[in-house]
Length: 211
Image 1: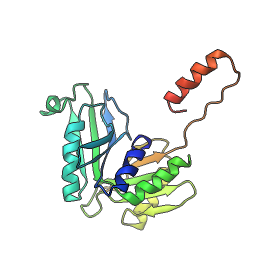
Image 2: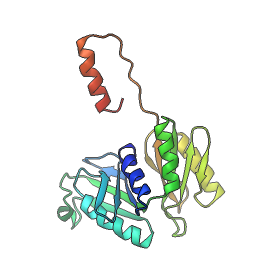
Image 3: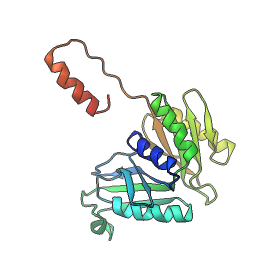
Image 4: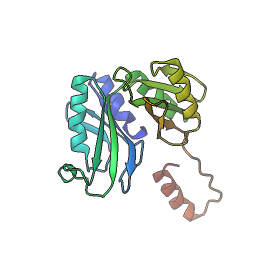
């Protein structure tokens, strides 16, 4: 999420419709990991990446449809699909992407968690009854809550699943309902001792990989 926050905030200030695409599962070789995001607007603006360029065009088109219908969509791309070469997925892997209209309140909640280096999670229904599809619940480590999955029992089960999630993952809550738990965790810290010249290069490398 961190890589798309600045652009989304700018688009929000301009009152632009925004769709958000999230990688929810990968199989085999994949250029982006689960949880990777791409935001888009109808003005041909894109922020972030969900496949390193392989399927961004197809996902952008789906994002426009999602904004028009205001209904989320689950996309599946694989090398065995008839359209695999058309969209450019030639890396041999398979990915699933959830595309949805941006929930501004949830986004602002998560942005505050990230900016304050706090822990939390966003749970989204990706499979289930039509009236529940796309519903969201966000929680913080301090047990603040925003939103609902539409049922108290689902909310409590989702929060329990989020407490054990150290990275983004899918969770089957009931026979009908599956959620995506998008875990937000504080950035890892690297403690460097010593001031020799190699520390300068190591500091730069550490920043590149997220420390």
